[in-house]
Length: 449
Image 1 (cartoon, helix red, strand yellow):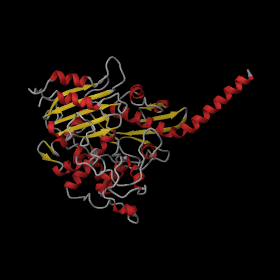
Image 2: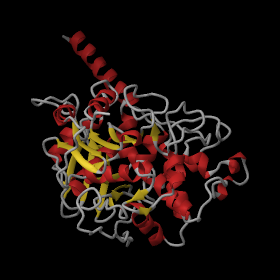
Image 3: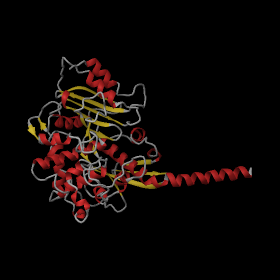
C-alpha cells in the first residue's frame, strides 16, 4: 500500500509539473480570450452565457475557463481553476475591451458619431426587407441544397455554420441561419475586419490625404532600416517585420490580442527581419499598426473614431457593425469587427461594384483593383488586406474571386465574373470538417452560365 501511495504521489507531482510547464503559462491568454468572448457575445449580440460557452468558447484549453457575467456592471470575468482572472468591460457604442488592473474604468471616453442609413430601399441598398426576385438561370432547388448542405443536421457539430447569405445581381437569392441565430444576429468577423481597415485607407487615398507609397509615418523607425517600409508594404503584409502568428500557442498574435494595451505598438516595436517587399507572411500585428497609423492622420480622437464609420461602414448601411478598441483607444483593425451577415454582404457588394455604392463612388476603382492584385511573394494568395483565389486555392471557384477571411471560417467571397457575393459565418474551419471549395462550388453551379 505504501508503495502504491508513493507511486500515486509521484504521478500527481508529475502531473502538476506537466501542467506547470505546458498549460500554466497559457492561463492568462485562456482567461483573457474567454472574458473578451463572453463580454462581446453577451452584450453585443445578447447571447446567453450557456450559448457562448457551448458554441464560442468550446475551444481546446479555452473551455477550461470559468466565466461569469455582471449585467448591471456590464462586464465579464473569467479564470482557470481560480487562477489568472481577467475582466472585459462593455461600453455601449464601443463594444467590449479586455482590461488590466491599471485601466481606469471611471475615465470618460468618446463615442463614434453614427449615422443610420434610412432610405426606404430594400436590402441590400437599404435596410427594408428584400424584394422577392426570381432569375430564370438560377436552379433554386440546387441552390437550396447547396446552402443547406453547409449546415449540420440532426444536432451534429461538424460543419458548425451559423449563417449563409448569397447575393446575385444585387438581389438576395439565398439566406439561412443556424438555430439561435437570425438576420439580426451580430457575428464577429475576426480577420475579415482587416478588409474594413484597408477600406479606410482607400477612402483616405481617394481624398488625397495619404500616399501609401511613401514611408510609413512612424518616427521610431527613422534611424534604422525600418524607415524604408511604406504603408503599401504594410497593407500587403510584406513589410519584413518580425512576427509570429500561431493561435495554438503563445505567440506575438495571442499576446497582442489578450495582453497588450496598445496592440499596434506590438508590431511597431518589432525589428526588421527581411527587406520590404521580399517576404510575404501573415501578421495581425501589421493591421493593428495600420490602425494606429490611421489614428495619427487625424488631429483628434473624435475625428478618428468617426472616420471609420462615416467613410465606409455607415455609408453603405452597415449600421449593425461595431469595431472594438484596445485599451489605448485604437480600433482593433485586425480582428474585432462585429456585424450581421447581411451587413457583411453589403461590404462585399461595395467591392463587387468596384467601390461604387448605389451610384456613389466611395472607393476609387483603382483601389479595388489594387486590393485584388496579388502581393509580391504571396503566390497569388493575398492582396491588400484581402485574400485571393488567383493562385487557385479553391480549384472549382473562379480565379477572380477575392475574399475577406476570418478565424473559424468567416468569409465574404466576392466573385466579379459571376456578379455574386457569398457570406458564410461559423465556428469551424481548417480540419476538413467544412469544405469551402465544395460549398462555393455548389452555390456557383446553381447559376447557369
